[in-house]
Length: 428
Image 1: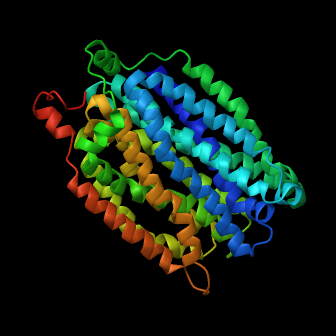
Image 2: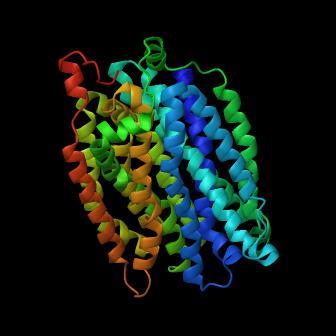
């Protein structure tokens, strides 16, 4: 389990490095380079628009790779998704600016961002299912939480490189070529990830389904015929996690540098410190999910998010590093109370024959609802006025309350499994 969890964590970290480095570049530099004819606000919105495309393509990737995972195994998904995301990310670093090739530059950026998201749509389902289906029942949330640490590691890698580049290069050098370096580095990281994943064994649960001839012929059709309500509820439930995370990691970065005049290195440091703490506590919080259940943790995380959004915005607006860090940390701790257990919770909600498709589609639809639009909406809501952007806090609070309602309608999986043997169509 340790080797499997480590390989899943490393691969997920690499794919999220690819995904996050684009978000940081969108907040810092892509607007003026690829949308120079726009105003500064419109350029930022346009850059966040290409950022959002990666979320819109993730459900499509989850459908494509989910079909592979449910028909041919979880293991092939890990290789194909990582290869696609890595190649697309390297290509982003090679796209000439608008000044060089005109309108073709943002079009290429859009296409490559779409491919990034498409590949990432398969990564989560493959990595989480392979880990969760190998894990012993009493420690499933713990072991399945390791791929959930991957996004934090990927974020720290992406922003650490960006921080080093912005600190070590002049502004002209960074805008000219420095921002491209993390995208080129993605090729080396992808090769490392593929090598680490080459020794992983297929999920025993999938091998059992294949041996018994019970694989789904059309997983997507079966999911939407029998589990459509569950897909919608899980997407709505997880939307707040995406909204909170990308508010902190993307919108707050742009708001702090552009509106508050905080140096980008300071903003990156504050966000990275909060993400580092979030990643470190993830497995410990997940252990609570193995003891007390998945649903109570998710409800607690949603409630904490709803209560913390106004304090977070107030702390951000102070522009004082220690207070901004506190605001970000509170938000991400509320986030991880939910997301530390969803890697075990979502697979347990779906029957094994369609689990890769169902869990991945629900998870990535939440990314569209909570992650794709949040930086755009937050940027628009924070425009104008000299006080704290309370509209952003109100928006996030509403999202948290909607997610709270969706989690309330979902069943608990742990107590039911502890009380009685799993029925034929229950997860294993």
